[in-house]
Length: 134
Ligand SMILES: CC(C)(COP(=O)(O)OP(=O)(O)OC[C@H]1O[C@@H](n2cnc3c(N)ncnc32)[C@H](O)[C@@H]1OP(=O)(O)O)[C@@H](O)C(=O)NCCC(=O)NCCS
Image (tube, rainbow, N blue to C red; front, side):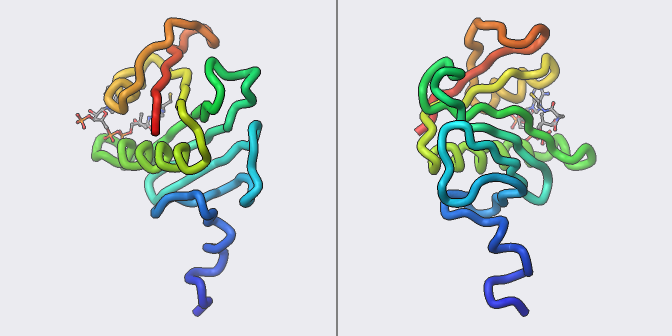
């Protein structure tokens, strides 16, 4: 057996990824404003980018582009678990805010995760929401 676990596992870990979260694509240890990741656990994935300050409502914002739990795994707490890992990831990379543009059907999920509406519209039909972290 590979000394550090399954082959490829090391490639999918970063010092700043919390337990149970893997980097599917993304930078190595030297990331910065503009860096983007696809992160995953066994039930779903998160796409996120550390915004450049000029694109953020506030500096140090991790913008979540999408969160998706496998269809047959939804409604069992896996979305919350995945989100909490993404929030820890955001803290670990020094973000202070998480921002999203939610699909109408998912606004209730983001409210449950502690997000509030910003009142701004960045994409027609989507709801801009933000959460202070850390
Ligand atoms: C949104 C999504 C990630 C939620 O994942 P999930 O595993 O079903 O969510 P959970 O079971 O962890 O739910 C966590 C809490 O949010 C609530 N919730 C989940 N989805 C919700 C929704 N669409 N509307 C309102 N509340 C919702 C749950 O009731 C639960 O609350 P509780 O703990 O008080 O019971 C999942 O449904 C999904 O992948 N949807 C398709 C993609 C999508 O819409 N992504 C978001 C894009 S903005």
